[in-house]
Image (cartoon, rainbow, N blue to C red; front, side, top):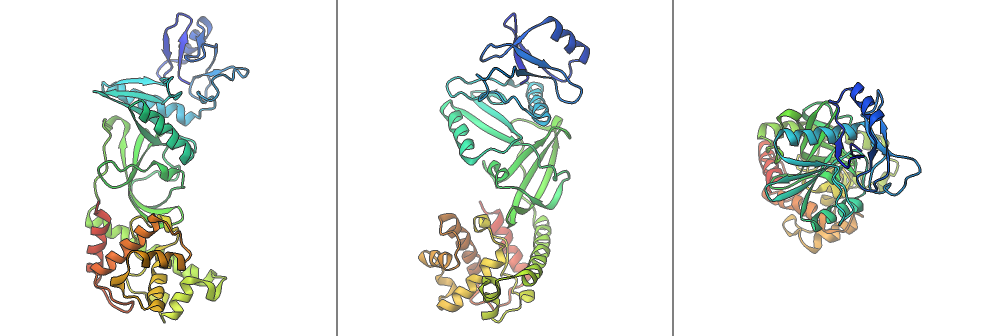
Amino acid sequence: MLVAYTDQNEPFILHTSISQSTLYQLRKTKKFFCPLCKQPLLFKIGSIKVPHFAHYPQDTLCENLFSEKESEVHLKGKEQLFNLFKVLGLKAELESYLPNIKQRPDVLLKEKNQQFAIEFQCSPISKERLTERNSGYKVEGIAPIWIPNTPAKIIKKGIQKISLNKNYQLFKLAPHTHPYIMSYNPIMQQFFYISNLMFLQGNSFISKVQTIPLENQRFPFYEPKQITISEFKQFFLIYQQVKHNYLKRRVLLSRTGVNDLLLRSAYELRMDLNTLPNYIGIPIKGSEILKEFSVDWQLALFFYIYTTKIEINNLSGQTIYDYLKWARMPVVKEAFEAVNNYCKLLKKLSVKHSYQTIQEHKLMEVLYTHFLAL
């Protein structure tokens, strides 16, 4: 923790601008106490980790309220965010304890008549715990803002393939625009905006990554803009290359033979996986729920149409749920919406069967509209 009370009952905030000699002098001449349990605290001053306070090992009263094993990154991050708000002239409190809900946000921010809980998250947090924390803030009329630590592999900006684990995906924001993740890297002192996420498979996405230096950030925080058609073409080029490599591996590594739905679909439809129509295996919003690469479930959908003799224009409602069950995919609302989005897109392209040819520019136009639609 970075906040303690002196023996004169005065709040004291540690910050990196305090010299080492001053810190050692303070440790010799003053005693510091926990703001909550009032027990004496250890004043840790090292050459590696940010100076901080910690409870003595035998004190367990606050173990569920104060994170005793805060990482160097977390300590630096919340201090830098706190200092940013102070520079912006905002009323901010570091590690302020909220007794009614027994929660302690990294920074409690007050802007006009609204309060915000700023949480710089460096460790995994379950969906259930995140929901619980947000519910607590809601009871207090506080708006939570979660800022995860930037993934170690994301160090540059631009359109690129990235990996985001399921826990990290919990931090997607979508206030008045398209979903994005705003993260922060305290080592580089930069905000990273991971926006316009295009799902590939598993935890892989294509995204536009933008950066803002700490000193240029404002509050309310900046939001990323929509991508242009030119940028979308870059997305799609990467997508097509990933799809090509994926299909090569699927053919070579498949161990299930005729039980492999992708290979079975291609065989029954007499289609070559290397020359599929350009509208089979395309990105669709919300398809993360299906987990598979788009080409798997979209080619299987045409196989399903072929076996059931259903016309594409009649793919809706219960028919889509029947397909999900047939393809052994999640029979849930989110999966229905993803497949339904694809069916709507096929109808916009006037696709009647799997042997049609659609001009590339027409496909690009419809896909771009699809991804930018709110």
